Image (cartoon, rainbow, N blue to C red; front, top):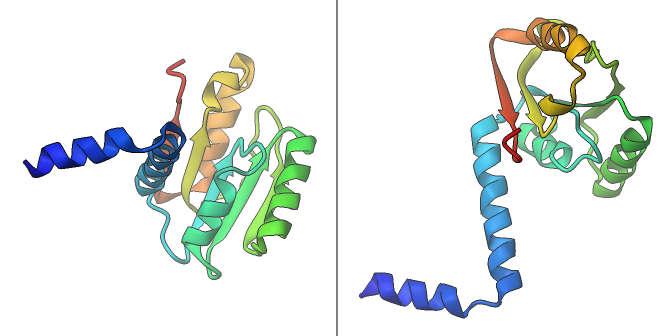
Length: 150
């Protein structure tokens, strides 16, 4: 019976609210998969406007560091605006090259790519992946999210 009550309550929620709850749940699940911990160094590679940069920065805390990396300078301007607006101070913004993410060597606990890998040019892919490998600590984590299944 309790299960039926829960279904009924869920069905009565306004669609926009249910959608927001779904999005929040998905964000929590993705952050859990990345598993950022206090004090860690994490790269948001292909960060775009910084959708994941701020939550990652908050998760690693003031003793951690997030590297917001993108090849598009306009997107990085948006990231700078966002982190200033949000009062986040533990983010370093990096403009990368197609075949080099420009990450610090052997210093990262995790690298997160959200809807990025499909956009890396085939001729740049080997250098791009090598840059990630070189940046990760031996125990580092690489999380690739491809929401469109490409």
